[in-house]
Amino acid sequence: MEHPGFFERRGPFPLAEVATRIGADAASLATPEARVSDVRPLDAAGPGDLTFVDNRKYVEALATTRAGFCLVAPSIATRVPSGTIPVVMRSPYHGFALALQLYYPDAMRPQAAGFSARSDGALVHPSALIEDGAVIEPGAVVGREAAIGAGTTISAGAVVGYRVCIGRGSYVGPGASVTHALVGDRVIIHAGVRIGQDGFGFALGPQGHIKVPQIGRVIIQDNVEIGANTTVDRGSLKDTVIGEGSKIDNLVQIGHNVVLGRHCVIVGQVGISGSTELGDFVVMGGHAGAVGHIRIGAGAQIAGMAHVKNDVPPGARMGGTPARPFREWAREVAALRRLARPRSQQEPGDASDC
Image (cartoon, rainbow, N blue to C red):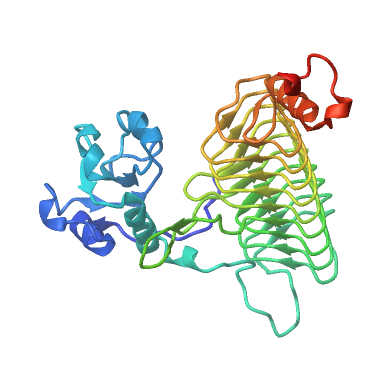
């Protein structure tokens, strides 16, 4: 059965009304009476949907979109395909944020279990589906329409939110919270983990920063383990995905829309920014980081404290800040070490002799 989702959508709204609400020029629209059903990402939008492009990295993808309407800056309005109606404004990302607020107002405020305290003190909502053999420890909260599989333990003080599904043989540790998420079988979520909270999305501006509602989910596949006090943000429009068998250490930050492949290893205090994709069997050492909107190829290894700012090919070994091929980085470190030696310790041929 298809999951019903975590947010209720308003609309549809006439295009002219949407344009007015987000600050676009409604008078310039060719078909102001057209109905806009939803706000969707560029590659998933259909004929009734509004999408946006605010990053030139995605201009090529614009050519193949099936979206009926697209928020674009004046500089790329001519790149909108013929089947899509352009909605031109100076800051498409601001317009996108306001459109999401119009269609998904409930996403502006955090929500967890989805029910108020009951007079009898029960902390498991009567609509929750708890299979035989599941263990709900004292003080755990299981929200409205949640589902917990057989053999899964929800530890004391943990929160399982509205419509969250957790598979069989899994474990949610003390004080952890799981919202807006679909979790597979044999998943271990250690104490204090936070899964499914808002991604860090704001449209910045001189008059203040507009909150971008985050309406995606977190998908955690089978046999994943997530260490204590790690955070996994839900997606903005797409899903944040943790691939089968991946192992994540303590104190890791995974941003919205991140996709981890299968059997990745992410060591403590790594930070992965939004919309970054990791292939299968990627390893990131402690304190490493990755900027957003890049791809790290399958089997790549990122050394501890390295910071990746560009795409990484499959199988590459990277180190340093900014990250570059490991051997290149190691040679640079060795050269600097030689330069830092006192002259009395210099050997013939050292760079400092030149």
